[in-house]
Image (cartoon, rainbow over all chains, first blue to last red; front, side):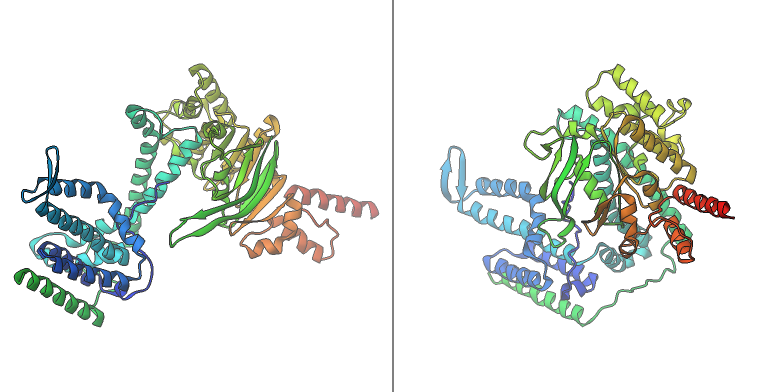
Length: 266
Length: 287
C-alpha cells in the first residue's frame, strides 16, 4: 500500500560506485551541487550532463530508479519554470494577455529546470549506491572535527542511523495496522476532511504505542550490549580510502576545474 | 456458500528489481462449516494468502469467489465482505486503540453501520464468548495482560459476527493455559455456531487436534490439501520443508518399530491413548 519512499532507498548491485568510500561520494555530491550553481553557460551544463551520465552508467542502477525522486519536486519545478518564463524582463517572444514570455526568461527557466533536475538526480545517485549506514558512517567521520567544539557527532549520527533504520519498520507497521483496522471495517479513504482525520485515530494510536515500545526495547538491547556512547568505540569495518577513491577525487578536481574555467572564459 | 480460489498468483514488488512470487497458482475451495488448518514454514505465503480471502490484498492474477461472487469485480462491496470473512491478524493486540475494552470491541460493528443498541449487544456477546471477565470491560486495553489483550482483539473481530473466521497464529507468545483456552473458544465457535474456521499455526499438535482438513503451503505453492491423517503420513516431505508431524506420531512410529501393533495414522495423544489401552486390554484378556 505505502511503499513509495525513494530517498534513501539503496539499490543493491555491485559497481565501482557502490564500493567507493561514502566520504568520497558525499564530497562528490557536494562538488556536483556546487558546480551546478557555478555553471552559467550551455557548455558548462553540457560538461555537467556528460559527468552525470558517466556516473549513472558507472553505478549500474537503472535510469528509471534515478528519476523516481523527480516526482516529489514536479510541482516545485512547474512553478519555478513558469515564474521564470513569464516574469523575466527582456526581449519578447510572444504575449497572451498580460503574460509575456521573453528570450531571457526562456533561458533562465531552462537552466533553472536543469539545475533542479540534476540536483535531485545527483543526490539520488549517492543514496542509491550507499546504504544509510555507510552514509551516516561517512558523515560521522567527515564531521569528526566538530567534536572539538563540543558537538556530539557520534550521538547525532547514531540517532540518524537509528531513525533511518526505523523508517521501513514503521512503514511496514503502518501497513499492518491499517489492514488490521480495515479487516474490522475501518475506512481510510472516503469522507470529508474531519471524518478522514478522525479515521486516523485507530491507526495513529497503535502506531505511537508500537513506536515507543520499539524504542524502549532498542534502548534496553543497546544497554545490554554495553553501549555507552561514542567514546573509545571502535568500528568493525573502519572506513579507509582505496585507489578508486583517489581516482574519484582526481575526477572531481578535473570536473570542477572545467566548470570554473568555462565560467571565466564565456 | 463457500470460498473458492482459482489460480491465485501474487507478486511482491511488481516491476522492480525485487520482484518475487509470494503465491504461485494456488487453488482451493473451502465449504461452509469446515475447520481448516493452514501450515507452512515462515515466508511460505500463509499470511499473504489469508489477506486475499477478505480482499485486503488483490491477486496479481487469478480469481477469488465468495459465495459464488467474484470479489475483485467492479462494485463488489469489500467492506461487507470483510464483515463476513473476519480476519484476526498475528499479534492482534497491537491494533487496540480505544480508551476502554468495551468501546474497542464496538469499533467493528459500528463500522458496519449498526445501531448503538445492536453494537453494544454484539460487543457484550463477543466479550462473553472469549471469556473475558466483565470487570475488565471498562478498563483501558493497555492495562491488561498479553493474553487478555489478545482476547479483546479477537472479540473485536467476533463482534462483527463473521461467517468465516481466519486466525493467523492466535496463540503465538501465549502461555500453555492461555493457548488452550483460546483454542477451545475457537473450537466452540466452530462446533456451536457452525462457523467456518481457518487457523494458521506452527503447532502441528493444535492442527491435528482441531482441524478436519489441512492446507500445506511451501514457497508460495500449495503442497498438500487433505485431512490431517493423510497429510501427516507425508511426514518426511513435511520435514523437508521445515515442518513436522505431531510429536505423538513419532512416538507411535518408534513403538511400532519395537513390534507393538498400533495403527498407522495416529495424530493426537487421545487417539494414541485409546489405541494403547485397547492393546493392553486385549493382552489382559489373553493372559
